[in-house]
Length: 239
Image (cartoon, rainbow, N blue to C red; front, top):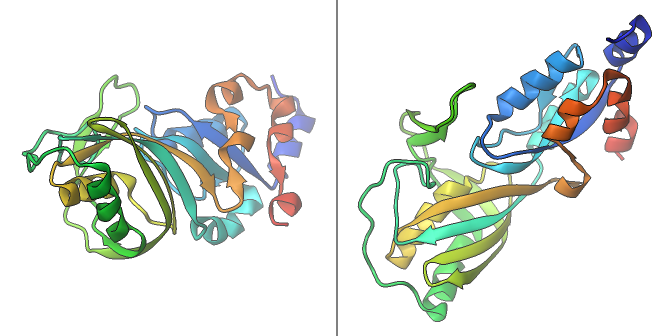
């Protein structure tokens, strides 16, 4: 049980916390759990992350929330796998199946040609449906988020390679707002086969990297007296 000194210390803690979120839980659950477990006054985040995705979640503690915009506006990097010859209403493997174009699996040359259209400035439109996982639920649900307007993102780098006849590995670096499951769907349509996002891991947000993050499970085991050591002081984070 925390003593008064520990509580006062955390009350005055202004810092960044890098968390490696596992796939299968909502990012909001991570935020609420950290706030409740360590009795923090204010915990925000520097960008949401789909429940089905894993990887870097930047949390902002107390006065660090003044810099939310700086983190929100930073570039992001993701990696994972895409499955060809399938299509869903959410763009990922947890959605409801919809008809795929049914074209032949692409050659290396066809893949390279298609990728040219997904670098630089591209317009995206968020899928109307998304996969969510409610607290306490063992399964994903499909939620209708309504129609969305197209928006512009910039893809700095997109590396894609075949790992099997119907599977691709990818690494993408882009400006904020990139929706990776939409990118997978759009690439699948450009290839004439359809595609779904099979896995996604965020590896970087601005200068922060997932290898410097603490696993969420390990964070849950951390005692209150040791919590501050898991954070990055505000002065250090902003250098």
